[in-house]
Image (cartoon, rainbow, N blue to C red; front, side):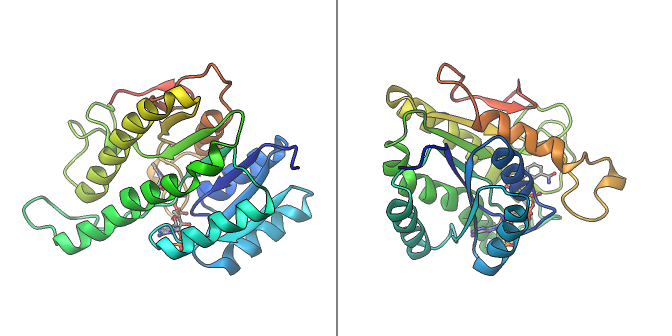
Length: 244
Ligand SMILES: NC(=O)c1ccc[n+]([C@@H]2O[C@H](COP(=O)([O-])OP(=O)(O)OC[C@H]3O[C@@H](n4cnc5c(N)ncnc54)[C@H](OP(=O)(O)O)[C@@H]3O)[C@@H](O)[C@H]2O)c1
């Protein structure tokens, strides 16, 4: 039986991404980390890099928009490890930068909802039986301050009218977090939403004021490592509550 805490992170295909850095930090704390990507080779390459540093990281293929891919990944984790302690729903897309309510192509909007809402929802449903085998199960949903009404910098009431589609998907993902937390509370499963803050995961973002990926990932790690009496149904950045 695996004695380390087991965490699975979705959307780990880039070394610059939050998923990779979250994996690196959790593995550094002694977690067994399953990193997943829809392109297996990308996850395998990143896992090999961390394994060179003696970190316990396992790559798997997982496309959260594909039910068959999810079923295969769940089977793989079940056969290999038999349980899951933490699910980090990190995968997501940021498309349609200039969409507005008046002009958005609703086909593109639906595809964005598929990736940012229905994908993690589907993954959560599929991994729940494995999470229920854990003594301290956690779900961390990586959302965004853009999905809040009142985040002073990025909230719907404050941020200029771009990235409308993305904001609406993350707002829905926040709401899903609240409902899931209520539903799973009696089973001891903590479910929280985390905004990593504006993080430099792509070239040019640092110059626009984005913070280092190490800092963004810390917020996710905080929610993944909460104690049994930790909060559930909350929305956090840097371990502090954010306004919805
Ligand atoms: N960076 C920020 O400032 C910031 C702020 C707030 C929230 N976030 C959130 O943080 C998360 C990570 O973002 P990031 O900045 O680190 O960018 P990123 O590296 O592009 O991370 C997104 C990941 O999601 C994966 N993905 C997309 N659709 C998928 C699917 N159907 N199945 C599996 N994987 C899929 C992408 O993989 P592919 O390579 O296969 O496309 C990529 O690895 C996202 O949810 C994002 O919305 C980021």
